[in-house]
Length: 208
Image (cartoon, rainbow, N blue to C red; front, side, top):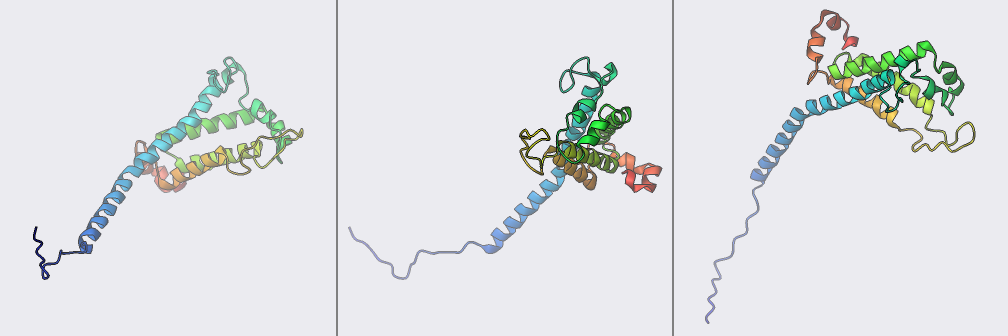
């Protein structure tokens, strides 16, 4: 079997076209950016509505006693106090005695319940997100102090069972509320645009 050598015919080797790959990469990045831009309002809308339902459900359960966090027959309309159980059970932190004094007080019940209702409705409707963020952050800060995650032990000496000395779900909710307000997340699947066009809102941007 004869083997013929062809010294002047070398197998070709070509570098991939940098121009073509660069163009394709830029096109892919632009497409991904466009997709993220188009998707993010809907992601924020879902986050807004779900967060709103968390607050609204807490109001409804505490008001009517659906048998979840609030036992049946122990709702607000049945004469129960939405703050007494939580605040009287505070067992750590610098405001322990203060929270005990507030537990079950009429003004505390009304303020807490109106806060839950207002924040929940505002988030679901997509209006007044800045007010909801301020009110919700204040509420979460007070509840964070009431649970006092930094404590390793409660006032009676028992272990607190705190899983993190700083970051807990109250902090997460506060950050979510602030982010939704900063992003103006009420326009998608909400009444944010119509709300912003109201004369009183357009003159007072803090109502956005």
